[in-house]
Image (tube, rainbow, N blue to C red; front, side, top):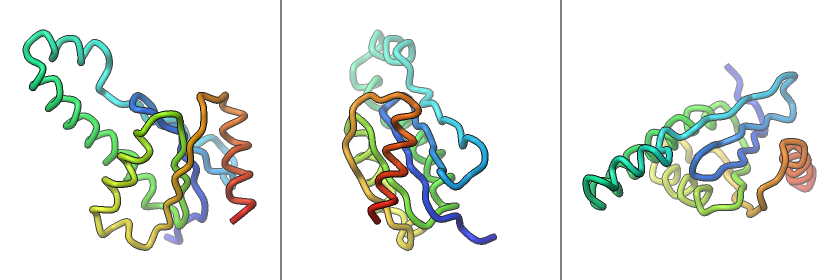
Length: 126
């Protein structure tokens, strides 16, 4: 299967919106399983447990996103939090992603239409 060319991912620590501007349909979203309820439950037991739980769930979240990234040649990670940088660092440790160009950019909390426009604008410049 030939890899598709460009994918944009707007993300924070709770959700990742996948935007393939060449696709005829929406790519969808991936939600993190580390919710405020999970955090509260783990924090009630111990702060150390909460941090371990967050790290495990973030890795699962990043693995799920990474499985989608493998289908593309060029990826843009953007969003308002440092989750995009954490994902980028996580992917850099895995040799499966060495031939995929990954760009990282900051953005605010923006609407779905603004996300699509952001991705189109980024890849038009490249």
